[in-house]
Length: 246
Image (cartoon, rainbow, N blue to C red):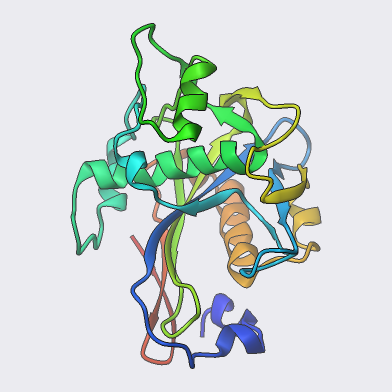
């Protein structure tokens, strides 16, 4: 039994909903390593949400079709792209792999009002999605070369919502600008930078706590800074989670 499986609460263990195919999703962990203990960007989901209301999470969400066409200034490290292509059974392509990170960057702007990237070329263009237009208006384009692939996890079958989520991390000096009013969606409240220790005491979804542990281990053993480091992949097989390394 994995730590993730052992931590599941009664509601997370329910599997009496209709089975659905998991949807591609992505999350971005922005990491501040300037102090004695690393800090991470997190926010509390609004209580009006039906999915995980009141829980503290990293910014993230579903991949939008426009994420496939969003501009970027620099590509992944080759090892990161290779790992993201692992077990891509439907529509395997580098464009889809890039859309994961681009979705996490877009959602970070939408939910927290933080734009990460580099100055855009004068002739840069973007999809018509309002979030990508906001990047263009601020003269910013995402860069994928510093993105670290931390983990992948697929929601168990017969849950009300299912996601195939890729968790990325990026150092906070990649932030190009921040909106003082926060993200335009208003989905995250109480956005803050807790230390890893403080974050563990927040009201977290089980998967978020598990990813915090994975991140802490990578930081401790130095593998965080190695794009070729092994990446944990959690998937439900028969009666429980299986953690494999890719």
